[in-house]
Image (cartoon, rainbow, N blue to C red):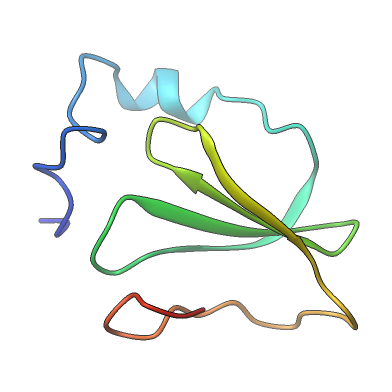
Length: 80
């Protein structure tokens, strides 16, 4: 069971197929779910770090310096 499965943003009538059909505005190369909330972090091909909520609303976008090779959340979910 995911730790955020009972989170109001995660609970909806949408099916997995509907969620997987979501088209992001930029192609991404890395992704990681936050271990204790409804956040999905993604590194795009243009080297931006985009953070989305489970309802696919964009939470934050940060331009990275250099190139990301991995993407990992801290176990407490406070940092990437």
